[in-house]
Image (cartoon, rainbow, N blue to C red; front, side):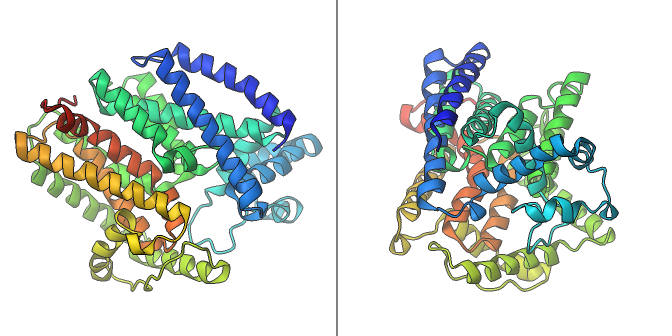
Length: 425
């Protein structure tokens, strides 16, 4: 951490806070100021963690993407045409860019990449652009990324709850929740991911009837999501289709779940016809992760059996996947501070789900629940529970999905505490 970088980032803190206050919506200036300041503190805490605790920059995502962004930024001054080609993917294997530039980077080339695209490229490119503003100081990058995360969380809280008290509580939980405060701050993919999700939900093209502005913003939000975590798009599409079809219809939970399942099956069939085996892809990702864990031996790794290919095998592993991502570590598995934080998070999530169930039984009403958000995050959580054998990684990767779940449960949490039937839309 550099004094010059901290000083420059404080200037940006003032500028960005001013912009946030100009568009604070229904939130008070005091709440925005306190929560954004807390978010910035989380940003510096994350940087401290990866500077003085996890000291290998080559394995720390905030520095891997930042350092590679600096290298790419230098290309702009030495070979500006090459820089433009890289930024717009307008190069070919014959251009020799791999030898000239990419092999000098830490994260551009993934050692065990089983995907058909590389989401590291987007983060490296964004960092290279931010270097024009930061003069090479990570602290500025961290605060800009955290501002994007704050905006995404604010838009989610505003769009998924309607009453002001619910919005205030939802935003407060979304910012202060440990995994959000830590893993959705700084230069991590999750900060951009929640920004893209929030932007898409805010300009919800169904509610805005596909006018030109909402369509443009929605497409840009989708581009961000595709560039960072493409499986979020795969989970978003069927859930959003259910949302669009059921928006003005009083369809019950089972009917919506059935419709969503039909969309999932159709998507799987279309992918298979196109030559993409989803089950094989999931199994390969899990095997790659397990093999990588054996090499690096992270402290919060846990035992996980290798998945077998086939739809039935994956379905059979779903209960254990849900347990891994929502309930573990169990109290007897907690050995480190991060694992304790994850245990506390899981306890809060469990309490929220119980309070939601109590509300539904008490008032016999879940019609105001944003069911499509639940359908959106469910396959994401299952996937993470299937392929991720490290508690620390689960805490980070699941953060955006968990925050969305907590936001839609916030009205029920308040309803239980106040004894007043909730309204959400």
